[in-house]
Image (cartoon, rainbow, N blue to C red; front, side, top):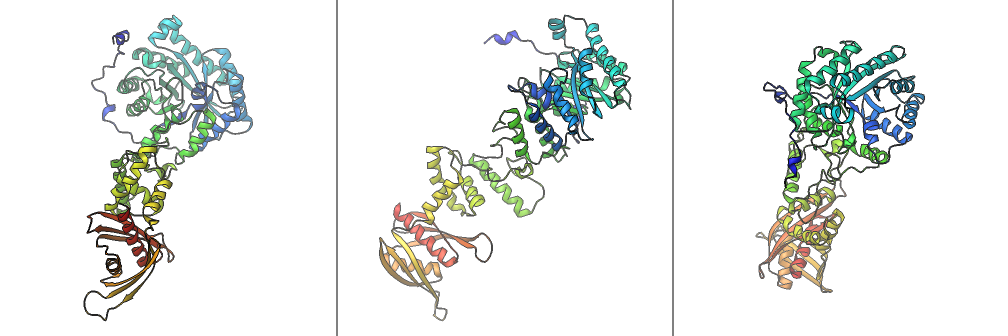
Length: 556
């Protein structure tokens, strides 16, 4: 495998005194969505006007204050979309739209025609500055490339002079990550000087990772270097536009924020050319998980997914950070157990701080529900099955019973894969609640005999059938369960020992039913199993649990 020798390492930045590595993210940047331009142009089937309007409305609802809506000089549909936004008065007063245009006069003129009636707009001009593009695409010198940026700035300034609204200039040295830093600075400073940038008239300087070329720390070094070398930093809004060619756009963005950028351009779920843009939602949810206000209304991820998938015609991957259908799902038994215990601990402690193993964020804070957290397959353990029974159906299985019932579900999972909660409940009912043969409990009368001497002060009269034959058994004991056990021993010779007993209410209120669990050992065979009974009467539930267990022992 020698083909790697065809590639050369991208130079790093020499910055022994870099500061970003010691910084912390403490607030959200200015977010600019480029879904309707960069994202849209990467779609196999670009959005039509009405789809773009629906997407625009979603972005407004999410709280984006800057939205790049397209390239109105590039096509009629882009032009018409902008006109629809204006004519239908769809642009809120606190939202600034952004339009992209190349540094050519006829395109800039057409762009300003499209902007007629807009109160405030960002006009985003760009030209490529990288070593490779200067060489193989444009065959132009550094001065010639810089002159393109200067001329584009002059043209925007000329048309902005007579524009009735406010125009904010944005300039991108496209392919910044492949550009010498001193030259990128030279071009950007030329744009600032030509525009007359000041603290009151700031320019957005956008430093894109048009192609992600190396590790995120190098991008952070590039941003910090530029940040420290601008001669008039207060006249600049320092912006980044990371792509995801190496799969590290989120990391590059977070490190660039540490390095001093003020603004981030990206898309929902990272849609964009090649491997995409930075996923703004991913970065925002990362901040949210650290207790930082992301300054976006992202509490309903399902709604965001719905609009995104419908308009882009691209599904969100099931493992996509925060948004994927399986993100808040645990198949691993140890994970399930830890999640179960973590949630229980939070509830017991009445904690307001979210701390649950394997779940860095509360699904309900994103509009998701707890139901999908634990899903059962052949890799799941006893804790996961118990969690499903508790969370979905309210049955709090005794710890000793977890493995016994999980083994039942394991066999099903090995045959069919994932086992749905309804199937688990069906198996629980068949294995425990409906185990009524060969011994079928019918009724019982319990009498208190407290005036009798000794511990056996409870009399049980039990009516049941054995293989269809009715039997009446009667015995005393130190309580209802012991009395019934003795009655069965007396009538059928079934010698058992109660190993464990527990009960709890199923639901709330006076009409709630009770669930009883009994762990019984057959002293003759040495086998043990659990039985479960449910009734509005706790004594009846306990007796049903005894019969359930006996029938399971008989089956084994």
